[in-house]
Structure formats: C-alpha cells, structure tokens
Image (cartoon, rainbow, N blue to C red; front, side, top):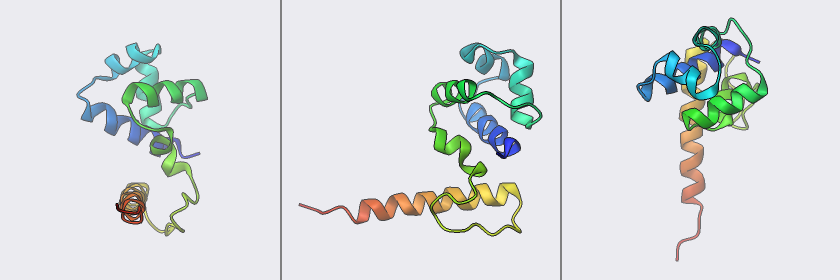
Length: 108
C-alpha cells in the first residue's frame, strides 16, 4: 500500500473542504498529530480509520486507495512516473472511463 499517496489524497480533500488537521481529527476521533502523520505517510491508518476518513471527507474508498492499486482496471500505469504524475493520470483515466460509461447508456 502506498501510504504517502493515501496521505496526499487525504490532505488534498481536507484542504479543498477548508478543514484544518485539527478539525478532521475531531471528526474521526483521532489526534491532530496522527492526522499529520497519516498525511505524510509516516504512520499507517487502520481500515476503520480509513473508512472514517472516507466518510468524513465525502470521498470513496476507491479514491483514497487508488494510488495503492497496481492496476486500477484502467490498464497499466507507466512505472517511471512519480506518485503525483501517477495520481493525475489515474484521475484523468477514471474521468474518461466514467464518461465512456455514460456515453454507452441507451437513450430513449
């Protein structure tokens, strides 16, 4: 599991909501320092904590864990990309895949 990527996704969503680490920690029942460690990838969060983060931040578990998957069903991701590039590419491919699903729905 790529805990650094998980932490980046958590930080990205937390900051987009305008929340501090303290506010997120309070919402999920952990210490502020623990949230900081998880966002840096220096401590591992339990499955229960990851689910609480997902629910509190309003994102799917798939979103939080996407960087940890070797193959997200979208085809292979080049290994020479850094984690930010991989995350961006996976988000772009996920968006395209979602659009393709919508385009393939029958129209009335």
